[in-house]
Image 1 (tube, rainbow, N blue to C red):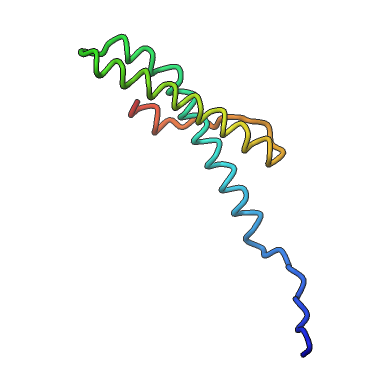
Image 2: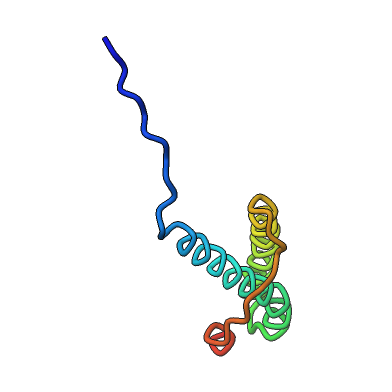
Length: 93
């Protein structure tokens, strides 16, 4: 039984564009998460109930974990963790 040779993988012309899109998306998400880390404590102070304040505090901790994970992803990609200002998100926060 002969084995069919596996063709060498060629980079498609879309891969660099997809990688850029992926990295840009990471930068967008990183900006939002870092912004939330700053804003959630302020929002917590304005909370009208203890339950809401506790939920915001919990969410702030989860968000810090998201920031750490995104920084790990940037490191794996050999990129510096940087944000891309997302004005559309800023207006909704």
